[in-house]
Length: 222
Ligand SMILES: *Cc1c(COP(=O)(O)O)cnc(C)c1O
Image (tube, rainbow, N blue to C red):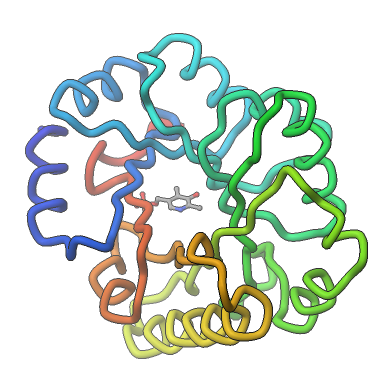
């Protein structure tokens, strides 16, 4: 795998409003350093323990993104440094993030994760649940989290039209939440969708954050 070349090729075709998160989960720090040395400083991980280990081992100007399901009891380990938490799917989690952010004197940026795929196994909110969360008194009292947008994962399928519909659905949710709850807030701007196999589709449908692993680092070593 030529990591540097893979990143260069992906970035070359990206519109200027789309950010690449290089998903380095299961990959060693050497691989991340290769990407880092080529000038890419934004990485995503899906496990807290790996995130902390890699944060400690690698240059401190890396922007770390938590892209996986986050358990409330682990928030404290990443609160001091995390750049963006992609997969917030409950008020309970948001409240814990707020508490830990406060302890660290930070405002932690978050995305709300939506359930857009048909599969049962994927985490995420429905539009109704998100509206309930955003309308609640508890949410309005949170001072140290900033919801910057939405995130979703499409169904694992070869059916491009199905994937496109799911991405379009997420963009619709983003637009609706923006107009109803975030009208004046420029910081509500991110749509995190698109992975190695579907990121071009995701960009066509309005993605601003693509999360790409295997097309950069090769198949994962589990
Ligand atoms: C692993 C992972 C990715 C990257 O997947 P690839 O298909 O390897 O690009 C993106 N998003 C999430 C949430 C992931 O867990």
